Image (cartoon, rainbow, N blue to C red):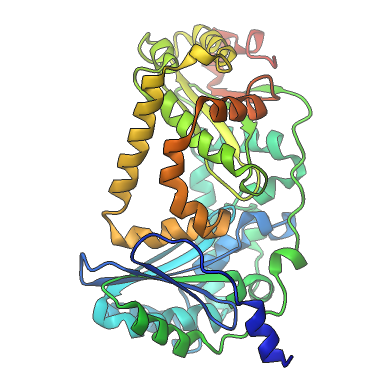
Length: 449
């Protein structure tokens, strides 16, 4: 076979399942393209997502995917200064932004439907032909580091960071998109090019157009503009594999004193499921989280209704790799020990069949169904929902998710709970002021179980 023939054969994959009004094509260079026809408003949102983020970063690159995201909106071949780039976004009437997470970096422009061609050309120039000017990096490094500093001023982030260090050990940088101060502040154009040459290829990217468009015409525009973007010739996540996250060996509990923690906060963290190894539990996790968030749940009644805490929330974010399950509790400052004891009592009951009712399970599924309906009402948010799942799960997972929530059984929830939470190693932390700790003597009871 010719090289071109081999490439075409490589990407002759089965069509994924997608919702009605979604149209898919994989270009010969490996770029996944989805067009979402939605004519509710005369706008088009163009998003490009890359499988990049914290999980690709060892300590020497921690935070640089985030800095790379910021540099995306600077100079490029077509607009060689940021001033010219910004002028072009104004001409297009574009709303634009980007985000960096653990397993995805995404960029989007929302423009009028008549500016689709211009928007595609702008995003093409930015992702394929960036210019990393030292003067731009000099301006942007403190902006990115400033985001980190703002996070550090939050007691919640301080607690989250220490929980993460205990959960992920020496792989913490692969769960922390915000990065490391020194790495961010010493970043060079050369390091930006290293990231680009590792991950920024069509065969590691997804392009989505959502809005008042026709898919045949939109596909043609994409092929004309992105069709000559060269394939890397390798799978970045195979060539640069993600190390395995090691299980937590033993439970940990710590007390953190900080003057910024005017209200105490407790955090309990477990290593949760990964889509790659246990996709069913990621679905059960969402349903169980919703059950415990009901005002009628035993957790809410025992902690919030009785005045022991102002909030108590269980959460989990689906990922291709293991993610953190978190129980975050804001205890009544005058009843910290009573709150902690009740949290332990509630968690000890999580594995029991009577901890929630069939009616609560039904209510939770109905809430998830309504939540999905609301998400469909804002066309500009649909690309982000899809690209998150493309990076961390799959198109089919995304399409089937709402239906699969309705199929979750007590057996599914019990499997999730018994595999990841009940009787498993937990990392527990509490943050409060030195004065509050002196009164409550938290170290006398906040210990590993």
